[in-house]
Amino acid sequence: MFWVRLLPLVLVTGVAVACAKIANSKAEDQPLSSLAGSEWGLEGQDAPFVQFGSDGDMNGNGGCNNFGGSYKLNGQRLIIGPIMSTKKACMGDIMKQEAAFFRALQNAHRIEATHLKLVIFDEHDTELLSLIRRDWD
Image (tube, rainbow, N blue to C red; front, side, top):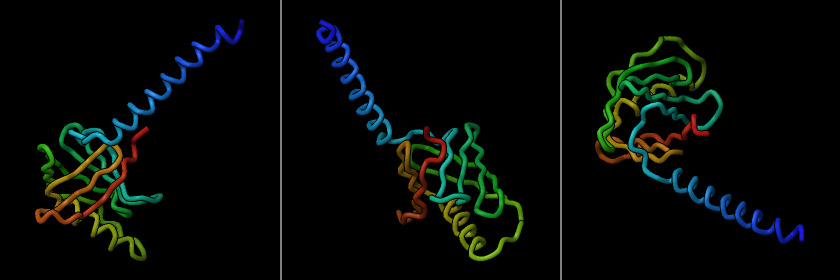
């Protein structure tokens, strides 16, 4: 008798869990219509990252220096204003990596974005950066 009462609960729970997984996977693959409030970076600890504010401002860290600037997103068209950064010097290839990161942001022309991945292209449709979402729960 116990199993007869428990079986409908188990079935309903199983269906609910399956639906939640399908809903979450679809949300992760859906195109992103806004960058506001999101944070993206290269893979790795202390890797360069960028945060997009809801007010058109952006900031982040290039690996050595903090930076800031403005951005405008219209559909898939991304325009990033001049980037201003601190002027610390770092050892090794960090400065080269940072300069390349800043250059890629400055040359942004178009994006393809889902909730987990942001790909930035230049005006010739050449991929400049492939970033992963850092603030996704």
